[in-house]
Length: 259
Length: 259
DNA sequence: CGATTACTTGACACCGGTCAAAGCCGGTGG
DNA sequence: CCACCGGCTTTGACCGGTGTCAAGTAATCG
Image (cartoon, rainbow over all chains, first blue to last red; front, side, top):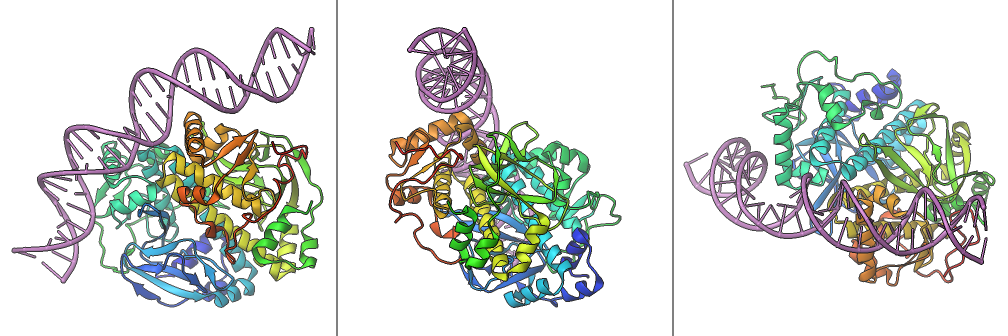
């Protein structure tokens, strides 16, 4: 399978074949589920590219609870730093089994310096991350639980579709309700109730650990989700027109088959 | 007064005098309070540097309510874009009378391309913005109203101190409770109650529109505020050792005198 | 197949939203 | 200089969304 980073950047800005070749970091190393990819508060001089699996950025709160401040999907960097020895204000943990490729700060600089188009693509993906953060903030601060959940599912579907891991109506989401709760600022119990509510409204269905969206437009309307905010350039309906089933697994285990 | 952007970047990374000179964008144009600096969803090919005053990034929600997703203080850019014709996913509005200097995309590119140190400083300030966003997310999603408010006040104090607009114990904050509510995801009524609660605990005092912090350590402990997350490099106690009173006004009106 | 982890369900309490009304300014015009 | 006025702040009553606690059921893994 093609490197998901290449998919994403090509999707966002378009990439020349020469630049695509520069982005091949090899197969990556495995990280087990629930293990740190980067420890909270550590000083690092590298970044890690997520190749497969789902991970998260998190912060530990004084209360002992974990706040998830972002999900990392295949093709995302844990952090983008161009200066050595940066102290992180967050940690990165694998939520499922993951494959990650470590990229040194120097290598990243060389990449960005070597091709202005690549530099622009990396910058654009940073902008998109910030847009996602803003959308999270707006949603978490102003919406009730069910809308928050719906919005998150819309966002994940769209980002997964961008790297070929979701079609128009379903995607794998092998993470726990506890983890959704940490991301949405809800309790586990309430996440459960919210999911049931969305199922009652037939806005989503869940089988195995696959989310099925019977009517994307209805879900996006319910969530007040603007599909455009993830797209600096074009506002095409990502994934809505994809034929076929969900693509190979998030977990690095390609043995998944839709139910 | 020295350009607050220069103060900030010099503080973050250190800047050579030659680079400092490049950052002088002149006096800027005035923007009245409650007016847009950048309209929500507009396509722009420039950024604006806030020279004085307080502004915010906001998103309009489906409910009609406004969500404030970040405060802009003197020395902050409304947006940092290197590619033309980017569609914004947010708006920027002046909360107080402001002065802003418009910088074209091309000029920004020239700045970043002309000095690697400057490019690094701009990148670092972007990183700091992201750290602030993450802290907001964690706080809003996991803390009760009084801690959220306390955390926001700690953050604003520290960022203002960085550009010389707060000393160790007080700073001007001429914005309304409604605006704080939009930023914290609370109702106006509750913001009022929360502020009263913090006053009862003598964690803050307010006179005129100046916030006075009798004991910063106590407030930061209450808020579970980590003063380090705003500082990629050094972890000095910004502002804690500043002598003298609050510096010239945020509002472009220098007639402020401490009560 | 036993044990741990995830999910579900119900009862109850509380934080914070909403509504409504009453003070409190700060500016404006007579 | 004073009366008016609109926006901001403050207060109280009431209600709903969510958290917490606790128990029970289903799934997963060694």
